[in-house]
Image (cartoon, rainbow, N blue to C red; front, side, top):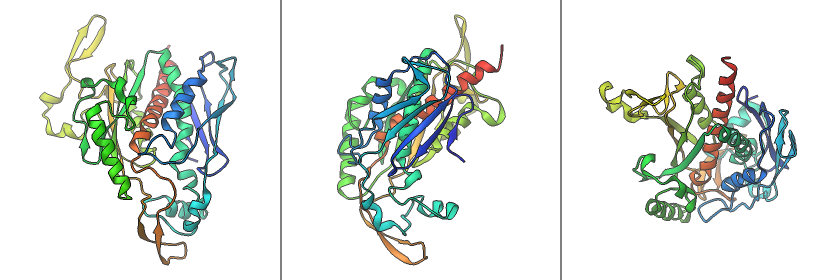
Length: 358
């Protein structure tokens, strides 16, 4: 229940933060796709913990095994299963909250729903689950590359520090040049210092990841309930710590008049284009061929290295002390997760579109 995503290109993830491992089953991947294991590894390395001083110091190499669905480097059209073994879990770090509910975590809600919870690192609710999504997203990216589609996410805000430039003004090839994954070197330096100061004060901070998908063909999306932007919103809001999603002009669009906001069409050779892109590449829930762009807001990480008042399973007032290894700001490691979920949505709709007409 709730562990499967997509309709044609469909994934199911499994595993817990402190279990033996995590994994994903990808169903619906067409046969004959070249599967580059080095690329999957590179994507997992971008998400893995212990990358820098501004990420959790848990040391997981996030190496993986493909158990099925690939033969001689090609997809077979059968389910692709990938497993990522846990190797550096320290469950004793969580013994002090075995019966306590951590503020703003899923401890209480999981306990109410299931009557049992894995308190070690949050179990299934841990952000470590996203490693499986990134592995599946890497396969989706390989499929999208076949159609010429590329996805570029980057950090555009941490706390009050904002990268106040449109993506078209940025050199997105610089995103991976620094540990915060901001393509503006000067702003990146300020973000890194800010996050490190937050870490030293034993606190956490949130941020924003912006994303743009280029060369998306027109016609992807379904009417009414399965609109492309609705599925992208669902995908992003399924990521741990996400509190908001906006695409195109987003909330800023309310300040504009229709005469300012409308994207005028024109003909460029054989292609219909728009002179502006306030629609964010989607109109009527269907892609129009322009860049799809959106922003994803992440809350501050809930685990802080400070004492907080809470209650335990018996309803008694207790103090929860922050322990373990946690990110002071999640957004640098969230960049590949946002890209992975975008890739999964677009791959699904590309394949679905091929079924919708002869």
